[in-house]
Length: 296
Ligand code: RIB
Image (tube, rainbow, N blue to C red; front, side, top):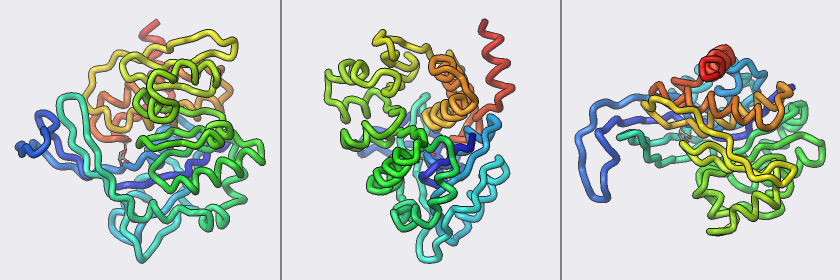
């Protein structure tokens, strides 16, 4: 089953520093890298590297960053045929500081803001040929709502990864198959102190990623469950959430049961943190399976 990712494509400008600077503080960095990123592209690469058939829907500028990012996704086996190249826009940029096992990110969306309804209409038949679609919050929310409604009409499963944090309408929550916020995003969407109730209201749909604590959810039976995270030697957490989402989509489209798919995605996300860059540590299926056997 084909996976479609409708989302952002960014060039990540990554500074390594001993720690994240405080407000108003200047620190000396140790290196600067230019890495392929963007939550959408990261999720697409994560699923493709595992062996999934993945189509990317998004936009880049007609510039050096756009050319490099398209080539890099294609090298990982992502179909980029339908990505729009815009002469009048810059490719999205993310300024990332990595320090002390954490990161901060500022995104300048550029061409990602042009992933709109007209574009979706132009790729409609290809999008509708996918069995699963992944969305995130680095393209306009109107587009996400449009795509989710279209997919719901055609029985296509949708994962909405609501990152970075912004409000999500209850209509959109109802329409998607899976919602994968972190704890902070979940509190913004459902209210502080109301996330556990929401998990019970959306069993098997609301999957809250809790970092080192793993994934919290209510099972379809109503039982509260925690799927533990993999213990990792963390080098860079950038893209770990994206790896989780891409790997979860891959696992579900391969027919894995919900909890098995979550365990698989947790291992993939854990492995991804052991190398630098959002996409640098994303594993193959063989690497995930070898790691799962080692842990048994
Ligand atoms: O989730 C990580 C991603 O967020 C980075 O690759 C960066 O591009 C930002 O979009």
